[in-house]
Picture 1 (spheres, rainbow, N blue to C red):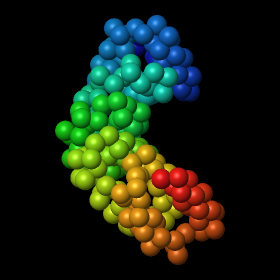
Picture 2: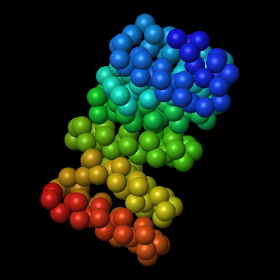
Picture 3: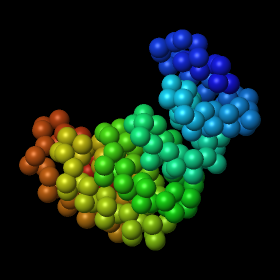
Picture 4: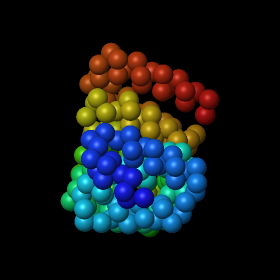
Amino acid sequence: MIEKLASQLNRRDEEPNIELAKELAQTKNIEGITEIVNGFKGKNKAIANDCIKVLYELGEINPNLIKDYATDFIEMLSSKNNRIVWGSMTALAIIADLVPDVIFKEIDKIEHVFKNGSVIAVDNSVTVLAKIASSNKKYEKVIFPLLINHIKTTRAKEIPQHAQRMLVCINKENVNDFLEAIESRKNEMTASQLSRIKKLEKSLNTL
């Protein structure tokens, strides 16, 4: 499988990696997927970057085919390669609702990236946290305050997107805290950002 990666074909685009993900999804080739996971965790940076792309593209097609590698994705959150960190968090965002217990055990590692990661890593960590919070009241009790604090402190331009990602864990019991946090930041938002927030608030009327 490694020979089919973009870097091994001297390609600068991602198309070979996307095609490989489609092939693996279609064939459900577990041996091939394991080879890609090993490549993603290996020392060859070009191969690792290609492999994580294959894995989260595969997850988009069939998340069940990558859910068993959650601990591998979590392990690689400590990589010095930023592409691997945000790629791993992207994969975790896809499977978080399938393996919340596995991920919650390593919540400190998720939280570290949530607070210190790149823009894409943080975006996806919001999704990871929200999905885990939605799965279990015990998890919600730990995670929801983190999300509320994030709404209160993150850059205003991030609020509409991140609030949208949090919707999965908003319920009748916590919706008021969520809306109050958003309300406290409205004076910092642009007209277009406020428009997105208005649509989001409207969607919560059905709770």
